Image 1 (cartoon, one colour):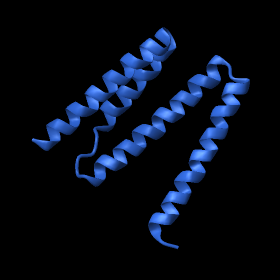
Image 2 (cartoon, rainbow, N blue to C red; image 1 turned 90 degrees about the vertical axis):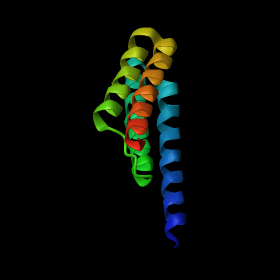
Image 3 (cartoon, one colour; image 1 turned 60 degrees about the vertical axis):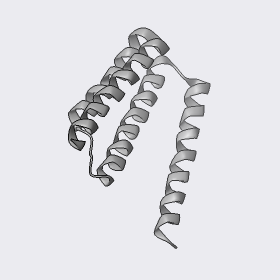
Length: 104
């Protein structure tokens, strides 16, 4: 089997697993389950974004990426959806700063 096909199938499998976890949290969710799910999604997203930018030679700064992820979690915990939006904005700006700094 071709490498691209293997990668696609692996990503599709993980997508199905995450969809199942998400549905379980939606069905039986408590606040802590949602926070843990959000934290896992953020960690996975930061990891994936770091790998994608590394392939282009502009890998993200791990500290700033982690700080952005923490801002999303804290914002969500204290301010709900509005706080999550501010946390995402902070994370995007921190990572954009890293990419722009490395490209110059």
